[in-house]
Amino acid sequence: MRLLFDCRYVRVGRHDGISRYSAEIVRELAELTPVEMLISDEAQLTMLPELPWHLISSQTAAGEPWVAREVNRLRPDVVFSPMQTMGSRGRRYKLVLTVHDLIYYRHRTPPRDLPWFVKLAWRLYHLAWWPQRLLLNGADAIVAVSQTTADLIAEKHLTKRPVHVVHNAAAAPSEAAAAGAPLREPPATPGVPRTLVHMGQFMPYKNIDTLVRAVGVLGDGYELHLMSRVTDAERARLTALAPAARLVFRNGASDAEYEAALLSAHALVTTSWDEGFGIPVIEAMAVGTPVVASDIAIFREVGGAAAVRVDPASPEDIARGIRSLESPEVWTAASRAGVAQAATFSWAASARALYEVLRSVAR
Image (cartoon, rainbow, N blue to C red; front, side):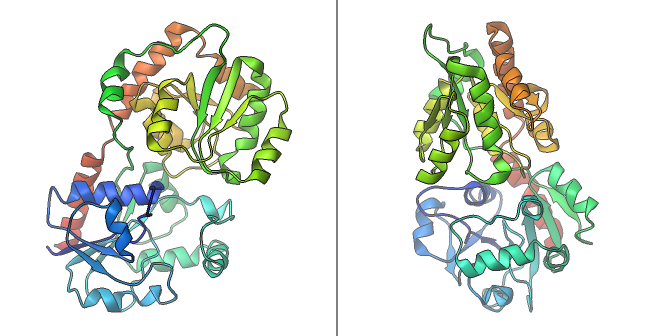
C-alpha cells in the first residue's frame, strides 16, 4: 500500500488543532506502515517527522478542486487528508477525508488568518449542506475525530460513504508533569486567588463572554488566565464586560508556559457552545488539573464523568461548578478521575484506528 498523507494543514511555528492532529497522527502512523507526506511549504518540515515528502500546491490555492492532477503523478494507492476539503476530481487513487466538526454551520465567522477570498468561500460553503455532501461523497471513506461529530454527520445525512471515528488526542505532557499527575494536591495558597485557565481562540462560539461574567460572579478569590493571542480591542471589550473579574491575558503562551499554568491551576474552564473534540480538556486532565466544561455532547464524550458539567448560558452555574472544586477532597477526586479519563485517548491508538481504515479502503 503506497500511502500519501496530506500534511499541508501543518502550521509553521506552533500547531493549532488540525496541524497537531496531522503531525501526531502521521508520526505514529509511520510506525505502522510506510508513509509519504504531501506539503505545500518546505518550512512545514520543521514541524513534521523525518519522512519522505512531496511538494504540491497549497490547500488554499484556487486550483484545489483539481489537486488530484498533481497527486495522480505520484501514483498512490490511498491518500489521507486531515480535512474534508481536499479536491477529488479526476483522482486515480482511494481517498479518505476527515471531518473535525460542523461548528461553522451554526457560527459562520471564519478563522481570522485565511485570505479574504477563502473567507468568502468559507461563508458561502456553510450556507447550505450540499457542498459538504459533494465533498464527502467524492471520497471512499470518512474519518470523524469524535463520535459526537460522527453522529452529527449521520443526523444531517452528509454522506453515503462509511464514517469511522479516529479520535483526536493531546500532546504528551512533560515527563515530570506526567509522573506527578496521579498524586497532585489542590494548589491553594492563603491570600492568593485561585487560578482558572482557558485555552482557545477568541471566537464567538467559545462563549468567553459568559465565562468572564462568571469570573465576575466569583469575585476576588479567582483569577482567569486566557492563554491565546488577543487583540487590544478584544482585551478592552472583555475587561469592560465584567469589571469585577480578575483577568490575565497571556496573549499566546508557549507550550511550556501553558503546561506550567495548568499545573498551578484550580481548574481548566471551557464554556464553548460547540466543539469538534476539545483538546484542552484532555491536556488538562493528563496533568491532573480538574476540568469545568459546558454540558454539551462533545464534553460528555471526551470528559466523561471526570469533568464538572455546567450550563454554558449561565454565569451563576459556571461559578457554581468552579466553586464545587473548593473542597480538597472533591478536587483530588476530580484530578485523579481526569488522569484516568485522559489515558483513554492517545495518538498511538488513533493511528492504529486510522491504519485499519486505510488498509480496508486500499483493499
